[in-house]
Image 1 (cartoon, helix red, strand yellow):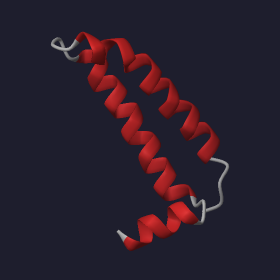
Image 2 (cartoon, one colour):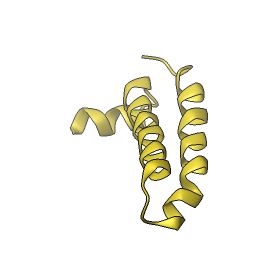
Image 3 (cartoon, helix red, strand yellow):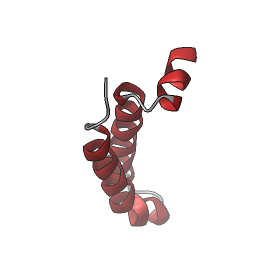
Image 4 (tube, helix red, strand yellow):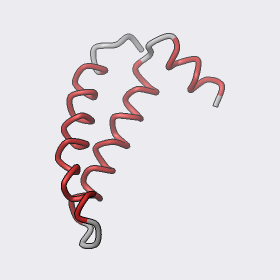
Length: 62
């Protein structure tokens, strides 16, 4: 946990890629669930934010 927070503070690729991947997965789950309309409504935005974040973060140093 300490390495994760240190990586976030030093703008390292690993922790931010993990957050972006979780956002993409969360957006897909929100898209596929049949219960909450609000989750379906925001699923595209969450997936898009995760994808753009992953593209930007892929340029960060290791």
